[in-house]
Length: 113
Length: 130
Figure 1 (cartoon, rainbow over the protein chains, first blue to last red):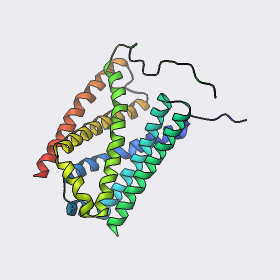
Figure 2 (tube, helix red, strand yellow):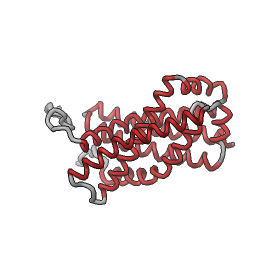
Figure 3 (tube, rainbow over the protein chains, first blue to last red):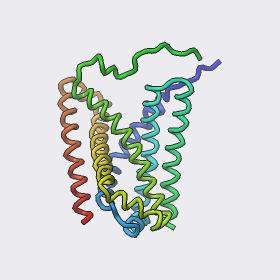
Figure 4 (tube, chains in turn green, brown):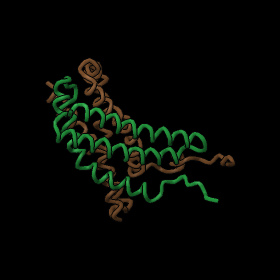
């Protein structure tokens, strides 16, 4: 009979560090984006997000962030919850990560084409 | 599954004497949770931009309000802190910088540096806006 494993193991460890390394350079670009676009009107936001380079960088940033934040939140959930609550929270966490990625990628695709 | 006995949960705040590296560890997790909602907002911004000017307008107005400015500063600081602290954890992973004295010193550098970086981001955003 197999033991149910509740810890993410080495896979999670590696994903967390790999996404960290990739997000460091991307974060400099994101800061520049935030500075440029805070409170921007729709036309400015649309023009920025539909440029191929920025759309690709944003798609990468959101996708890597979703992986990174899902892993981090999974650790918080394992630390502070048990039983059914833990299972429900882990499911919600995965749904949020997928929704964030799918929403942003859909938006970028719609703006680009 | 049997109910686990009621044990104290980490990080045992009532037991340990506060140190800068302990505060940095806790703040790294707190800013992570703040950034989790920040990334949800970022995705929402993209979705609203894709839906068109009518859907986008209320969000842009909210971001220009004092509440939006507060959210921007919160995001900028959480981001700055998590970036600096995360980079330090990658350095820790190489087995260096782990001496308590060194770790406390770099913790203070991260705490001070994160506010400086956040102030710079918000100032640049405000200047660029006008």
